[in-house]
Image 1: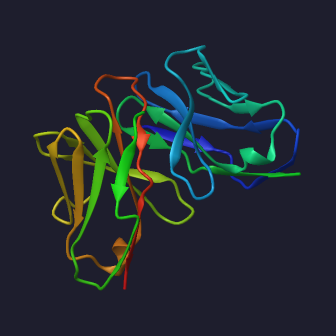
Image 2: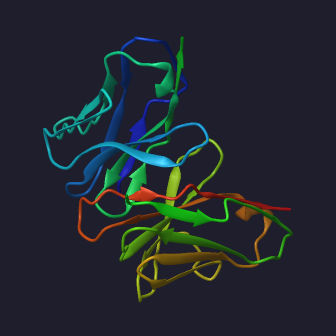
Length: 109
Length: 116
């Protein structure tokens, strides 16, 4: 079956710092890769996705590239804001999804 | 667009009670809905895949007689936790997507179930 490993949190950064949240996966076949975000008190939202190797998903300044050779989908943002504080989930799948454990990001002013 | 409504958001009830959770796609038709469970400080675990008009497909280790799933229409799926016990206390989340692969899933806000 599929599995996802992402870095444990919490990750605490100052505003405007560079963010990387590592994610690696094991999968049968060729899954789509996603990052979902859960802001405090809200439900899960799709942040970005990539459906095939070398695709780059991007949204709200966040980026992640589907690396088939390293089975990775690391999330990056060049300059984080306080409003980016949330829990980020690395997710793989086509229909049924497999979630990573989530990484809590705390951005301090 | 693509809003999924889940109700109720929180349930507190006595052991032995059956609890029904509804998941509705408000502005699109979802042939498939998914039910997940999240334990504290852990990730979401897929429980079952709910297909409109047919029986749900359960993941290994999930008791189908304990977690009854009905998907009677293209906009509604229900999860009933039968004779709930304290170990069933958890956060339950549904999702729905349009037909076809690579369609993103849209999640409900979840239901926090607490069994006393």
